[in-house]
Image (cartoon, rainbow, N blue to C red):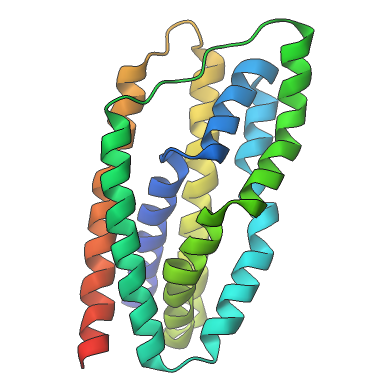
Length: 213
């Protein structure tokens, strides 16, 4: 039970960090909400639920047949990648800006197209592939070897917060377009960077000890 709770907590931390970190999909969520309304933003926020399946299947299939040390090496690489992403996020938080709202029929049409743009961007973006090949798949395989509840908890926590945090930002943007500023958004990004650093430390400790054992 303890392992399942730990996997859930790690999934939540990683999902929240990924959900509000700067990237093309988040930019599309925000701009789509501003241009096409809340419905567009929510649909774009849910894009990973549709596009990540082939990424997960391929990554897990490859790593499931590898020895423990190879998975540990992947986990260490993932920890280093998260550390780099944390530093990049903290730097980005200093100057991040919320997209400005668009007006007119053309903007609304672009908002409806954002859903398809989001699906294409997320599928072709290297970020989901890098995450699952270096971080997500090693964690998921390790969790599965400890029991299905842990693996399920990790996926539930990760995608619940990945989609949920983007959806929450879409709601905020939609309901407070005229009041939203950059201060709160930058604070969220800063918090995301701290979470990424914490997740990086956890990965490096867990998989680093396994690699040197």
